[in-house]
Image (cartoon, rainbow, N blue to C red; front, side, top):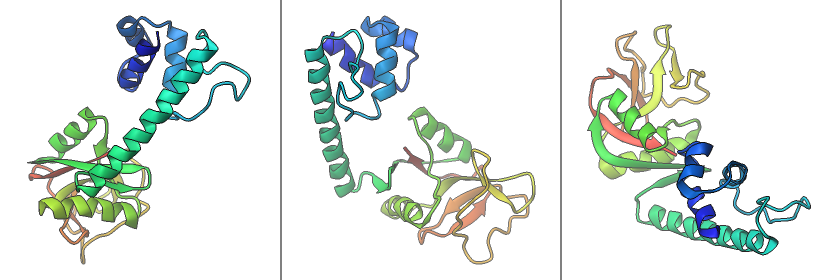
Length: 205
């Protein structure tokens, strides 16, 4: 049972409850509990006078919590190693990484979403700098998760919300409706660009 429960954490963000239940043989209610806590692995059992996972013996709840805390610690250490080796870049809770491929905007966005993220979308100076670290590493311009809206010259995040931070290069954007995507230069500034051009894929997780 304990082994099966731990397996849920590998699938909880990709599969539905019924799919997970069929894979690891857990009751749906237990799966829901794991999914609701899989991103917050440090809540100890019994704090609210209820077992952490209803249906499990107390000793398994306690043991499961210890294992999850240990796993979180190991993952944090791995994350620091990857940052140290330049494989990823961090800003706050966000992590940025690249597969090194240069493709058009649609393909770049698709690659990031397939990996469980989205295109790198800087919302402040710290995030812009973190993305720039990846851009400098590959020495290639990169697409950002920003596109021109229905009004020419007005850009939005790809989720449709207005920009709350910009880093446009001097006199940009100047495409006047013909350059609907945005790339980052090697100095961290932005330029509007035609979306069919191939640029580095940088994803945000």
